Length: 285
Ligand code: CAA
Image (cartoon, rainbow, N blue to C red):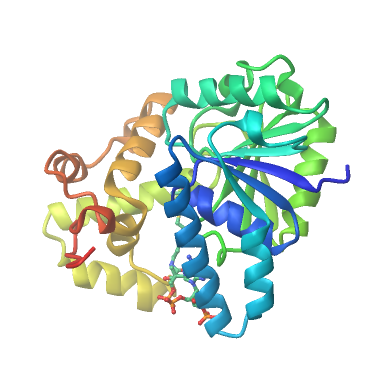
């Protein structure tokens, strides 16, 4: 499938990163946001992240300008002319995702593929909201999208081989390495990552060690780029809790119970980097 025009719905952290990587690889991108101010903000973040790449010599100034010119902001998928591939990257609420998929379905060119960047919700259920669920797939990018090499491809129960192949080829065209997973709670990435983060929070809650030493063990002892508590702050503690709930409910297994301290942090509004404090403080954020 020769894909040239894509529609990205949602310009938050993941959506703007996804639009960024498509535009850098010469795709025409429509970036859909609910309000003009949000689209403008997403474009400003993309420009800033492209500037980082220019400063590092990874992208030329002309390449940055051309990439930015390929991204057109819009308020609805209806304003994305003839898109052949869409990626939904709105917040992790099933009803919201289904309504975005219904809009995409109504606006899509015949044969267009509809992907969700969900980090843990059931792709099969999202797919059931469109006329042809065989054209729906999970395409889970990692944050920061311009940097991380992985795309997790999740086949829903009815995803066709053709859809899977197109998403796989597209991932490779974006310079990413695809890894495929079946549609089980948390797929691979969050089924493995989140229990590790949750266990680190149990270690902190039980006084096994300090946050600094828990992070140091995983950073220096296991060569992780960030310790689990720092990474949880970076992902967002509300997101971590929501994913643990999906695992807990999806498998009905107590080994996935969210740590009470994680729940308390979310109740306190200490969500990590985005709220200015989590396990660590982020003054000025
Ligand atoms: N856009 C473009 N470039 C970016 C960027 C962005 N948003 N963020 C970072 N970079 C670049 C920097 O410019 C820098 O480039 P060079 O290597 O060429 O110098 C490089 O990335 C490293 O950045 P920094 O020097 O600022 O900082 P760092 O070395 O501490 O790395 C990090 C930052 C890449 C975030 C690193 O700490 C890391 O890999 N952390 C772990 C990230 C991770 O685990 N992500 C997955 C989260 S889970 C998820 O996303 C899925 C889910 O469902 C929850």
